[in-house]
Image (cartoon, rainbow, N blue to C red):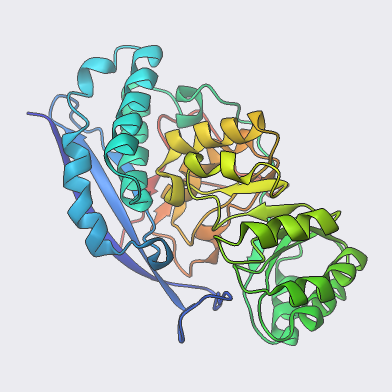
Length: 356
């Protein structure tokens, strides 16, 4: 007896192309993610769902995930004996994440898939939603909606379709950044968050910064290369807008080195290793005085529901990955009228697989 895990690679189409500054040629139309299912014979009918999004930028592919997951599963031990109460379950899940962190520096997506599945499984056994297993609130900020790189008129048309969202996140790092923002501002009056995905130079930032302020931009995410801390600090010193690190802030171990460099950090489950590590990374970021942004990849509702479970720790939320998909293979996660993900009382993540 013991835990068994199956995994499935999903190739999913996007509703609209999502191109970013570091996209490969031809990318942005489909995405690949990995969904796992966790079972234990002692708990018949209980299935823990998890998801990890392998991003080549962080050195991960479905193949690397498949290679690493068995090693991670071996470190879990007997989870069932720790599912007698919330305190014991929470302690065990934190212990597992600590072992993974000590034994394996990277492979965040592989850790994420199994960590989410463990939390979903434990919460279902205990009859609790995941956010309550974590001791967190269901009161979370609304999500923004992301628009990828394209010609300005096309981005503006997509902004019109996304007008119900309280903020828009605009991907920049192309030749028409300013024209794109002006076109979006012409059709949308809410806050704009810009994300250059490491695509700017200092000259770009210096030229664009006054215009961003005039156009009502709320924050600037990762304008420079991940390792360009001097450039990030240079821009933050000159900007009254918060600079938010994303590619520079992969795990909790990166936070101390960003103090005094940027104002905020973007935490993503697929980078840091799952829902448990994201909770602790967000808590540590707040302790260090960072403003907190909770982001996502182009994930199904599994990854987004797990992210929403820790969203009460974030000031800004960008959890729209499942909304970008043409067809989400899971259901059960719903937006309210204010574009906040509803965290109900169903055990675990509260999701079911759609029937074919």
